[in-house]
Image (cartoon, rainbow, N blue to C red; front, side, top):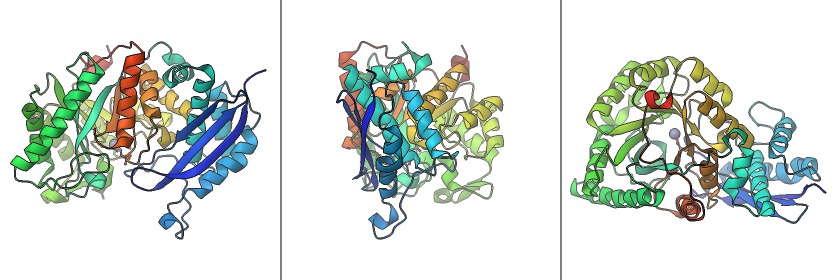
Length: 436
Ligand code: PGA
Ligand code: ZN
């Protein structure tokens, strides 16, 4: 008899910021159980699918997810109990129809994603195969394209993730000049330690750790971070550009207002063209290979300018711009905006739709970075997804805090169990390479 879904359960848990999120459990007719935990963002894009929250101030200041839990154990469980389990794409389609809204606002993208991921995990248990293999089958066109992801690792944080005053959100490293993932990870840890020394030596206070585990010192300007980061790479004994490069996530939607980008820490506001010039200047001064959300989520004209000016040599990643949505990505492809996409499952709400975005990107020479959220859990699902997707890049956060390390450590386990290619040394930024 074919495998069926026999039971769904869900409950409220806490994420890495201490905010409620969901855990979902799916049981199959052969007894296989899969549990998944749902991440949650802070610098969310306007076009993301709806994360359903209770807005009942008597429970976790309104941030509870009891409604989403009730949707899983109520209407979703009623619809899916007895449903064939093996065609996960059909289950996801059914979930989307059940929700019936374009942005998952009826049942909640958090409820839907929990079910989608828990189902994948229960299938991997049933088939006695690692999750990344199950996901690889689900990814259809990505069959046999599993590849180890090169990590993009947060060292300094600003913006909505840190208490400091700089506007740009993430200053990251890409340790690409290494033969294996584990060597890249070791280099990242050394650079993270060196960064602490550099902050101290430069006379800044080693203040709080930011939401994704990076350093969040109070600095006078965004450009200062790039100096400190380049110095950290050198102090750790690595060659900038050759072995380790820099990536930025400006998350600029969150300081864009009335047509201008407000760099309050620096006492200036820039128009889109001036932002593009600033990035151009930085790419000449620092070993930058990747810029995410350099411009705001609906500043399409600015994105076209940015792409025309820097797209040849730099990865220009749309996060808030694309929100893991095929129609927004298609618009970007049609209008020459960006050349890469950040892929966050909960921006769209199901695994199947996440795979569609990865496929669309691959078909048009856009690179893809599979990404965590700032609010994470100990679930390591993302590591398997990144491997299965063949995206070749993953963004998890810093190399401290266990909600991040569960993913880094899961990748170490996959590295041990599977001989997959690691594209570190082939890592190249920009459109030229992407279209080859
Ligand atoms: P978020 O941040 O999860 O708070 O949206 C991550 C990112 O912007 O990449
Ligand atoms: Zn981002």
